Each structure stands twice: as structure tokens, then as C-alpha cells.
Length: 152
Image (cartoon, rainbow, N blue to C red):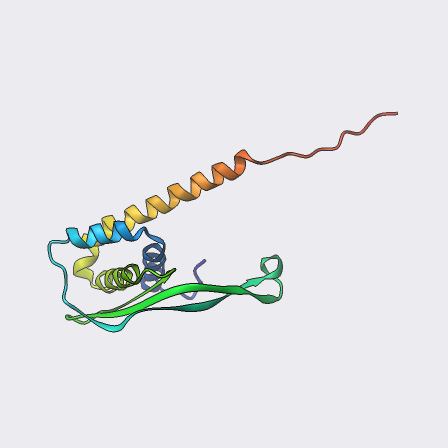
């Protein structure tokens, strides 16, 4: 959920960073290899794996509690023409984090944004399709319990 104080640019960046983080690394790699011009870049923070604490809330709104730890990989890059990109992904895929950071940096450049729009739109469509499939699978297991009242 986006905060109401988020500007359109911030909201757009949050959207594409979430899509890149959850994308199939093979899809990102294929798109990267298919680019006509791959920008030169410097690793500001090489991909590194660590643990983050996952927090939850009782009933979604109650008191927060530590649910447990999960593995996460992060990376930061700077394109030679200026933009800095960040990638944070669940798991241990260093290449996924690096690609997410690269695409984040490239998407901040208005000249490159139009060329990457099909990637982001495709990731969003794939994500929505997967969400709908999961909802359908869950709905198929729904059990309706009811109580019959005997009239005596």
C-alpha cells in the first residue's frame, strides 16, 4: 500500500522496485541480454546476502511482534551517466539483486523509461495473473459451514 504523501515519481519507483524484486530472475536476465545498449555501471555496494527481521501484527492492526528472520540480498549500482539504483530481493540470488538495481537506475532516466515500459508492464501482468490464479485455487477449497435449525 502506498502512503498518501508519496509523489507520483515515488509511487512509480515503489511499484517498479516491488515488481523487480518479485520478478523471475531469468526474465530479468533475458531482458538485460536483449538490450541494444547496456549501460556501463559501477557497483557501489556489491550484492551481499544477509538476514532481515520479519515483523507481523496481531490481527493485522494489533501489537507488532517479531515473526522470524528471512534471507535477503541487496545491491547498489551507479550508472556511468549518473542515476543510482538499488535492488533488494528475498533469497540469495546475487544476480537478481544486481539486475533489480540496474533496472531501477535505468528506469530513473526518462530516456530509458519508455524502452523499459514493456518489461515493467509484463512483470505487472504476470504478477496479476499469478495473484488471480492463487485466488482461484484458494476459492476452490472454500467450505461453507451452515447450521440447520430444526423446527420443533
